[in-house]
Length: 359
Image 1 (cartoon, rainbow, N blue to C red):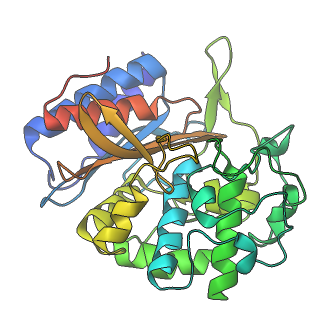
Image 2: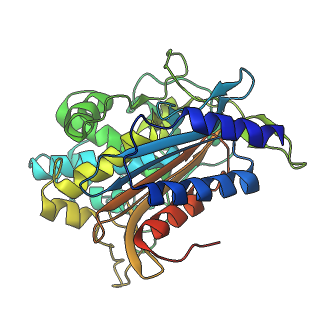
């Protein structure tokens, strides 16, 4: 009961000065989040919603720092985890538009130091998880080694063989997106993070998002938590995400994430045809369609086509979802592992379009 009371108190504190969605929508979203909180024991939940011509509406519930009794606000910065990937994909497609990258040539054309494999690997295959690059193994997910740049971090997997012939299977790989980040750095001759800032964040109007540097003082950064097997809350495990900035190493607010979706729907970063290509399901060599576009997942939620991506890592569970048809975007960020962000984002999206809850 004390936890729920704290949620209620912090929710009141985090209301924006002016309601930016209709009161009916705001009430529906609040009811969904409060029910979610009761079911998942989430320590902090931040939600941002864009509904067409209205400004972005954002609100937060709970504690960004339980130990120090710090209430979450819309300015709270969460680990984005794998919804860092859509930002990297957007930057890569920006370079495609600029004529500096081609989707279907071997990556060694742009990054000659990356070891050649049994089969060539292309940017398209990396972006849609068909490249055969492996994912984490062993204790790599818990790495606390600090890397000064994305190219140096490739050493964790660069010499390993491909798992299969590219284009013949779909296999989710964060390391594949690390390679995309290194390609971006190589062709632009600028640090990956600088290119993301200049060509993605600035056009989208994103001011707060930044790399999740464990040594940096980042205002409003949330602490991360997990639940033990007995249901008790504890601090999350240690991790230094510098080895995977392009695939899962940024921190941001929920509004930052929705600003990306809004900018893409409005054509502020990419041309419409480039954006649509990014949001088109890719195919395997046998012609079978997959559920992946280029850096995004394409899904159907109760008859509504959505573009989305989830994230999960130490002390974080996140989800972004948008509908081009309805001109709506939703982001849900939490600082609890397995915090149910995807289900909550889906319920919020369906409530906005008049659909049926997943619950």
